[in-house]
Amino acid sequence: MIRFTAASLAMLGCAATASAQDVITSQQADFTVETLARGLEYPWAIVFLPSGEMLVSEREGRLRVIDANGLREAPVSGLPEDLLVQGQGGLMDLALAPDFETSRHIYFSYAEGDARANRTALARGRLNQGLTALEQVEDLFHANFTKQQGFHFGGRILFDEDGAVFLTLGDGGLHQDEAQNPANHLGAVVRLNADGSIPTDNPDITGAAEEVFTYGHRNVQGISRNPATGSIWTHEHGARGGDEINILDAGVNYGWPVITYGIDYDGSIIAEDRERDGLAQPIWYWNPSIAPSGMTFYTGNAFPHWQGDLFVSALAGSVIQRLEIDGDRVIGMEPLLEDLATRFRDVRTGPDGALYVLSDDFEGSVMRLVPAQAY
Image 1 (cartoon, rainbow, N blue to C red):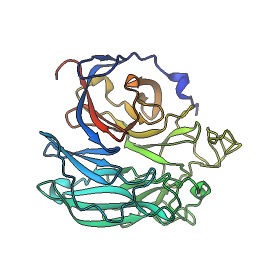
Image 2: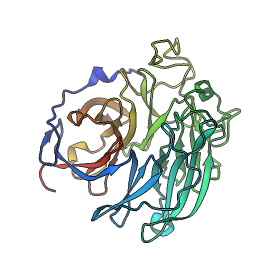
Image 3: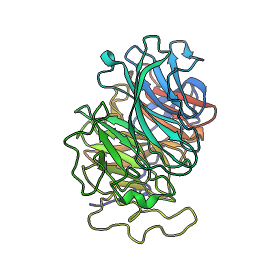
């Protein structure tokens, strides 16, 4: 397989400074940026309710509602009392159950524990009709390794076509070698049934915890299903270089930290090899790092020329990157929203066809990209 760095395929995009009035010209579509809500403390994820409202998680441990009147002041109650807010950890991803309209289940990932021993957890609760509380909250999964400090929690959630739920995890930062040990959950992607039990068709990996679907990851913070092929794509943070996009195959080892395209933050070598037999290669990687933080395949109708493209939000890169996709290959890239000069935490396709982005800031915002021409 031939692999390219981002720079080798980058398209030359053009963008103007973004505001609600500016028209931004991109390779495939012209759009404007609207701000729906401000003042969110490090917003992490957004989901869209069938009734039209949106839920936004704040890393600082709050779940907020955006309705027709804007951002509600009071957060949704009912989150776990042992939720840990430290470093990169806090309240993280959100996902609606596939049967949400009958079950009203909201799934969420969060950090739990303390500075000396913490881990990633997955829980669900029933959202009441008034959108004011999560009720009957139950934990479904706890990572089986408690780590030190507030680094590398992973935390993204995705349901597959069979109703099983994927949860991405990180290597814990100080425990990177554990990513090669499938007996624990560090550096893994796990797959569960909707009730937290273990699917009978999970891969049989020698010595692995039964929840483990793939392993050898550094810190996976993006996961999405390719609508054209059905494959599950993830992206993970590298260190200094080596951010990756991977396609998940059951039971596969993705190599971290035995192979990597990056180096350590101090310039030292993490691994001598970039490839090794038996370890999967990324289909795309970034050098230098952009710190990818969220991803979505565009499936809306508002931007016909973006159909099937992959959008990746970036923290260090302060950009939304549009990756042009052919089947399961990346064939081009275009940076968007560079002139906003902000860290982006997440990007989602909305039910209205707009593209929604979250800025990662103490005074974070929810913005959406809409066609320059009304639709």
